[in-house]
Length: 528
Image (cartoon, rainbow, N blue to C red; front, top):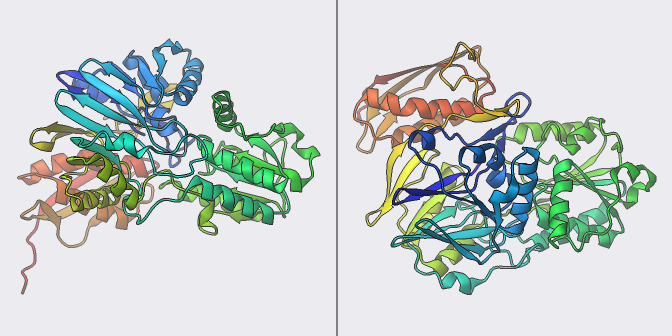
């Protein structure tokens, strides 16, 4: 759910505008960025720049653009997907302007250049953003894939020519992972080998936007004598747009879903949506026996060619259990890791890019706190200043003194309900219209330290009538927040902690309870 705002000389631009699916909430609604803080600060971007066409980078644009009414710049594939979304919302698509990878343009005091880098979708680009004396490289999502299948490989000379840049706003997703990420070419060969082992029908489930993976399935199907069918509206939409731009020339003529029953099982491979256990996706309907044109049975196989997104583990396990009850053979990231390749850089790829562009400063984004810390440690080992890990809602300043956090604003979740963006129930301050579910009582004994605050003794937590909570992860998160918060008094600490607590619980609990937070001073035990 990406949205970054860059400001210079009282002018602003936005980079990406994504959404996420809240599978922990009833009906799995969409969640989009909360615009309350920029609205309160009087920030309206003069343009929106899209780095690539994944849903977590473009999915909220049609919902939030009416608040901005600004031009949108995107590469051809992302622009095609955005036009479809705007048409569904009844919005005029003439605000969506196509920019080719490698091109540059200006918006007010900003000059931007789109710099192509491989990812799991074609035309993914880093943005070089120049304003005044500063040059920032916003990497977007990327990897150094020597065989990306869809789109060109990387051009080292293009990035060496940028050096040195002042700041990298960089992808931290795989910063703790040593070495290099696997190539999409390796996945294509693993898929062909696995399909060769299967005897009945095969369903390959992957992200609809992973065009490289669709190419990999096409190659594997050709080698094993299988014909391809698509299942899922988002998959059909992506293939239609990508084919129109020439990215799927290897894809043979497709078998309509309603004709699958006429083919021998060993000649069928279906590319389906639903790798994350989404309740309305094609694979879930197959697992539940609710698909009108295909029924899976013992002897068939399902290949999960996607990694579980954190938070989706439970619905994915439910889906796999249902498939297992049908007698279906499962292949996934655990039984056969070679069937998936990440779209994000591991440590050696990060090091390579940073040696090319020689950044002076790093702001690590994406991933969790663990990933951002690993990214900062890597950068500092290369002599790059990386003083902080940002949180959603942070207002950061970059100047001649480096990076500073100026303010932090809570970001209560906003969900799409009945075709409108609304505050998540229980987080809009109105208990009359949205009664909260249960109560959570938290008593937190703390002591001041040289660097911040620390919890003393056992966490005192009572969860009355509220949905379950993982106390271990909650305790770890609390300790991280206490260490990071700069507050002189218990009252200031409570004021800073409470909005973070609401946002954290709102992202993890199905129904947000009434929160009762008590912070108490305690003495640290003496060393003796």
